[in-house]
Image (cartoon, rainbow, N blue to C red; front, side, top):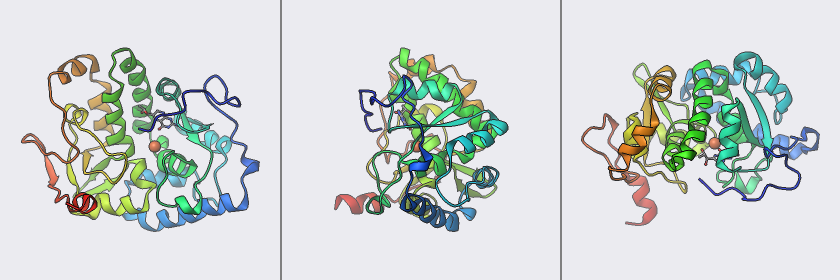
Length: 287
Ligand code: HBI
Ligand code: FE
């Protein structure tokens, strides 16, 4: 993930939070939210996991304009005890984990410009709130996010943040889930991206393989383009079980004796939903 600013901005508190300053958004800012929302809302009902659509609904996220974090936090607090707080951008890992461990989701407050419609480097309010917040209304996912924060604080002491960051990447940001015969989207990086919402489910290029914690933690990821591999979980309960009930310290130990895997690699133990052609990634390198 991109490196956050190392110095805390002067206006930010000790924990890097800032006021959302909702009154300061312009009509153009709100219109940009509505535009992004309409584009995703038209496409996601048949693609997103049901729990995500339910979250949009119970949190009233379809209301016009950028959500007010105070109002959103009120609803979320009643459902799962989570809050949404504003930060200037990427924050240091430890600060990020501390917030999650305390059931606070940090969200960027700025919104992208029309020039940045489909690509931006730092998470904006649309990615953070539309992409991440709906699933925080789901109890098992809400617990998973808190456990991830707690795991992050422990990983820090074990020098294993990079390993754990892969788990966040391939679940919270780019995860797929099986529902009946179908695969559905639940990763926020996909759900907040028009192009990747189609690519991740429908394109023959990427690998789609069963979730396996140790295997996943060996796998590099891309920050510059669509993923070449997606991991598929069976359910949020299963994801929670496989991570919360796992002692990560011996796992990090074992991983030191195993080689890392490339972003497109398949190994014999993989459960394969789709063996990717990787045609998309190849077309980008001109090979
Ligand atoms: N800060 N605001 C913000 N949002 C993130 O998703 C984020 C962060 N800081 C660190 C971070 N993510 C990741 O590097 C950790 O998951 C390891
Ligand atoms: Fe994100």
